[in-house]
Length: 231
Image 1 (spheres, rainbow, N blue to C red):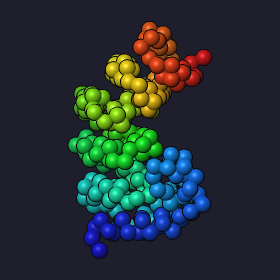
Image 2: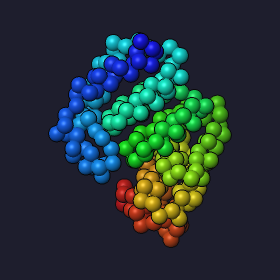
Image 3: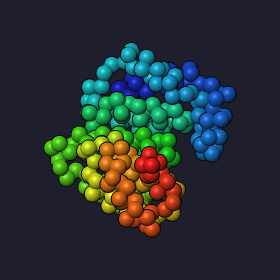
């Protein structure tokens, strides 16, 4: 059995064993009928993955093996395999480097929707936050993504600082928000508001002032989302 098959075959078997056709239909409907599902909820899916990983060898050439496995899971038709791939990346994010971002961003653009894109945005954020300690300008990687022709890559750029709290680059956050503000797409406008709302947890006055100063530039959706906890 090849190195890839060593992990892929048992992971696929473990998840398929949990398939529930009755659950799969409403899950597919929730995603507007765009994707196939096994019908496994998040808890059982993660538990099944956890159990099967206990019996598998550890990654040795971890980065390439991990990304190759992730890409193989991404090629399987049911959405739960992509969620498992994201869980694996998140679990091993400390082993990933900035140089791995192109492969992750390629996944962002493969059959994208918010369910996979937002999970990958979290992995991208983890990589960049860790890299910032030794590469202060590393977020320039996201500056390029902000202008990417693919809207889901732009969403990743907008969301990559979620959870950074006091380490958030506020100037960059606000600049990104204003750069994307003219866009009409729901998912972009929602992402701007979500990123601002998250920053408001640590800098409420700054976000409040930003919303007031740029009220005419930001969509109503963005303002409502950003101001949910500001009072």
